[in-house]
Image 1: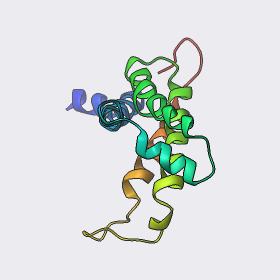
Image 2: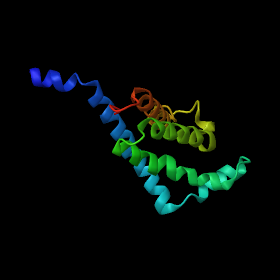
Image 3: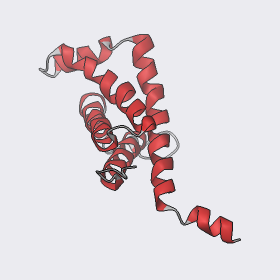
Image 4: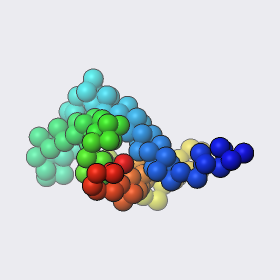
Length: 133
């Protein structure tokens, strides 16, 4: 029983688990962009008055930053990059969904909100310095 209490009384392990989960789930989105391209994102950017080349930033936010989280390399900046990436995703593709519900009754933006807030939590719980997690 003591071993179980010790396992579940490790906040750093919980943060590590959240960090890895965020990274792995975000990598699926990044892989989709690597195999399918970012043309659709570029079109959304241009239609909103932004330069289309910004679409390449999705590779940073959905592939490079998650790899950094998995490796434990520059965790806070990587998590903040993911949060910024999600803010752009909502701003470009999901603005009309703020008050919508999905087919199962959940908030239409729950996945985006979960990615965004998980990234913010990972960024805020990461310590700078030699014992960073």
